[in-house]
Image (cartoon, rainbow, N blue to C red; front, side, top):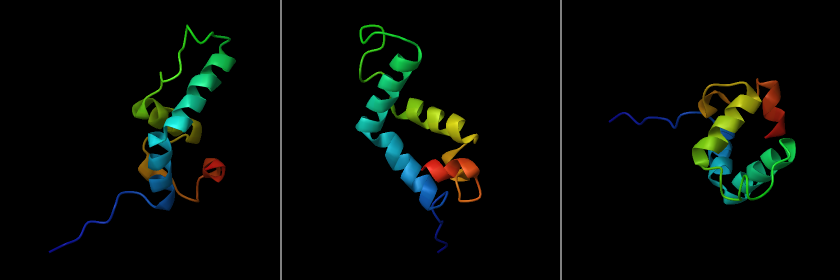
Length: 79
């Protein structure tokens, strides 16, 4: 029986947990409100979901998938 290794390394797993964290998604809501000068009624708390968080993280790190995260990426120093 062949065991498959989990996709990605330690940073990829940490990034996945971060995207599942409701407090991080709340941070993304508030960050976007501040950046675009929106009110809470225009962008309420709880707007960002796990997929939105994943997309934001991939864009911020310049990657297509969290599995690409590794210490070789300069953007990973923020994780």
